[in-house]
Structure formats: structure tokens, C-alpha cells
Length: 55
Image (cartoon, one colour):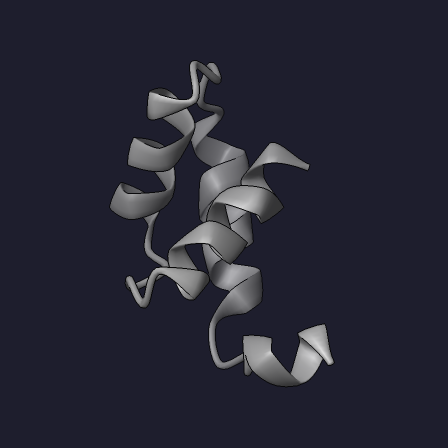
């Protein structure tokens, strides 16, 4: 769930959801980053309107 939370935090802050930013958020939270999970998350969210999904 930490990966999804990182993406939601970036979205709320108006930041781009990309591998670098997701890794930075996770590292700042003390999470050991799994590169494959980061890549999968960013790929899965590509083209997704997060505001619509949240509603």
C-alpha cells in the first residue's frame, strides 16, 4: 500500500507521478524501495485520471 499512498501524495501535491518521485517519497518515509514495484505502479497509472478514480 505504501506505493499507492506515495502516488496519491504526489498527485495531491500536484507533482508528477514518475519513478524518481515515487522513490523519493518512499525513501523519505523509510521504506525499502522495490524497483520492480515502482515501475509497475507508474506503468499502471499511466493515462489514468486519478481524480476520477478517487470519486
